[in-house]
Image (tube, rainbow, N blue to C red; front, top):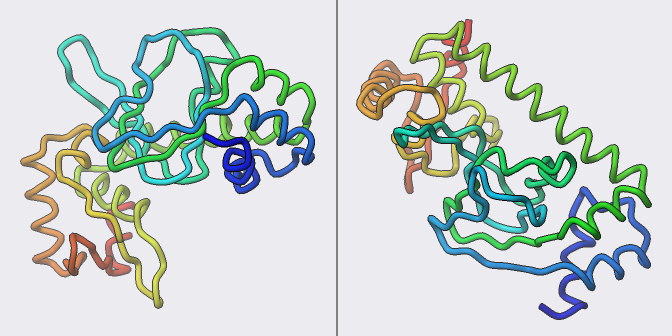
Length: 224
């Protein structure tokens, strides 16, 4: 990837907004842009850490699995979000796998320039810390959801998390496969299908074109 192209991408990354032009030029010289098609593993749970990644386009899922192959999706990330920084900070193996849900572009930053970036910029350091704290808060919320909500409530939470406000309506613009929802909430695909059908029949969700969904406000009742 040309230096100028790398620099142009880095300038649009919120995490790096506080870096000077000189610092961005230095970082761009050691940054690699990579493209992965749908279903590719970017990092694998348990692998040694080599770099952190910033997602430029597309979506990817962060998941863990047990020895029997059972998978749990911890998060779905989109453009501007980053991952892999935890292992660069504590030198531990990757804590989870990251797999593309569609074609994705990434910037890879290896450990040495990452460490230098953290040392040189307090703002970047704080941004990374905020990212880590945000994930801790999200983990707490997921634990609360699993402990206190039934399956209907857990499905409602996922749908609301993925929704956007469009023309006064809550819309889920990206198609969510039942299996992916099941992995997020610790339920079977069959159970999720039954819940989704029930929500549709009762008017809590309205199917739109291309797999999109409109959510009615009353769906929030399942969160209490």
